[in-house]
Amino acid sequence: MVYGSARLTEKQDRIEIERVEKHIFLLLDSPANLARACAASPTFRRVITDPYFLRRFHALHPPPLLGIVSSDVFLPAEPQHPSAAAASELIKNGGIDFTCGSVLPSAGQWQFCDSREGRVLLSGDPRPEGSCCGSHRALGRPLAVCDPLHQRYLVLPAIPEDLATFVDHGEHLEDFTAFLAPPAKDEQDNSFLSLPFRVMCVAQCATKLVLFVFFSRGARSGQQWRVSTFEDWGALSESNYMMEGNYRHLTTAQRSYVHGCFYWPIYPRRKKVLVLDARESMPRFSMVDFPLRVHMSSFLVEAAGEQERLAVVSLYRNTDTDEYHLEFDLLENDNEDRWEPEGILFLPLRYVKSCKNNW
Image (tube, rainbow, N blue to C red; front, side, top):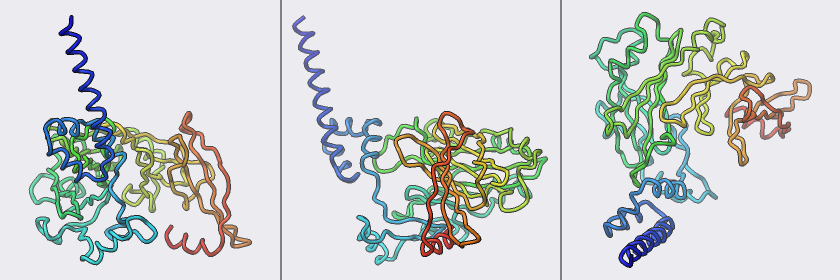
């Protein structure tokens, strides 16, 4: 009994020591310092490489915001932002090559698609090999994820043929759009130097949507690409929700990312929003209604507050007084079809001009 008690005390001491070590390591201010601590001893490495610890560290120490990428244009942080000095130094040293043209194969043949969390998604010319033809050649378009800051890249493997067959070759492929997505909630992060990511490709057919998802950590399981479909899309097409114009294709619709979900307005006059819930490993499509008073100058944003809620902001103009105001609607969490109006904000004229130029 004495020996058993001693072993129990030793285990409790080890747990307490690791708890203190985790607290100390969480106070480190950069991944580089964490890497040095990890290399100092096997005990530190076991503590630091624990997935739960790494998720806490990344949540407490997100990478500094050097600027914003709009298309392929870099807008650096300006004073008084804490990263203004670092962004200015980056510009002085030649800026950032978002095309990664100096390292990517076939330089100059890649086009900007999307950016997220310091990475850039590029697309190239369709591969000559393969059986795809016509509009379906988009399925064979190579994709590359780049880290412009460190000039590193990953060319994604082609979508496997057995998954590509989910897009029926007997019907016209209306649209094909690719974009970056953060990792799912249940994806374990075992690296403190790079975060996992996903690339999502939506193939828009006349009768359904086909979603292809690439997982950066999928090589371990042998499933880097997965596929799902949204069959209810055909009913929307038959109901004439997809009208001619800017909102006929998802590529031209304004995609928003709020609280782990992607949103596309499906021709706002028809009061529908396509939702892609990306919080789980394999995302799911659904539809929600727009507020009745929404119009073409409306966009989706994240509502402030303790609860995760979706908001719609709409810009209105009084034609009699030439005055503008914003109206807000919040989506109720307990009812995906109920929007609550939250108020009106009148805008000074000098702010409206800037707002319209960047709408």
